[in-house]
Amino acid sequence: MTDSVESPLSFRVNIRTLPRKGMPVSIVADGDQKAALAVTHGLQAVRDFRAMLNVSAWRADGVRVVGTVSADIVQTCVVTLEPLEARVEEALEALFVPETSRLARPALSAEGEILLDPEGQDAPETFSGDSIDVGALAEQYFALGLDPYPRCENAPMSQIAEGPSDSQEQESPFAKLLSLKRKS
Image (cartoon, rainbow, N blue to C red; front, side, top):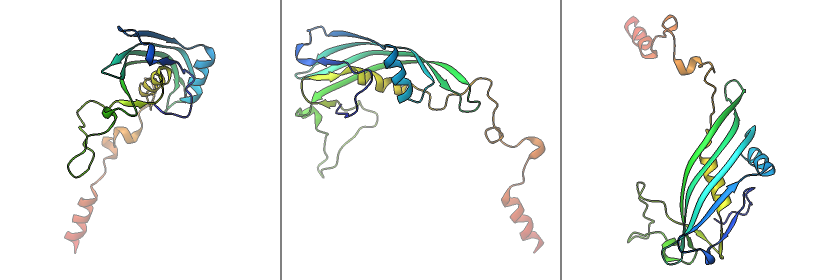
């Protein structure tokens, strides 16, 4: 998490002073933060944003963040351009290790290629210093929960999506070629 752009929800947690059972963090966006989220993510409005997290120590020097992110938003329908109310509900789970940790280094094959398991767990994120911005992390999960093509229920289906109707059934281009071959 070495982003140079600061999140409107920035909330830094000092990892050196984490309690043994973890530290609960509750983020409720105020009006300015909701407006900034709406602009940043191309939304008409963010009516409510909440993140309920628990930040705890993981292994020797790592950090584990778990919780949920929820928001009530207003998007724009991609078909009718009407306002469309939606709800974002995302479970959040992330691991962080210092940049110097051996867990931050990817596994390598004998040839020096990076080994990745597409079905395996994500590699831990790295951090430097003694704090992690859990607000920015919550915003990332919020963004993942947004529908990239929001659509109203009453939006008409396009002809392309439905395909040709029975009255407009088109002949295959290969059938046309076959008819030309038969004529010659």
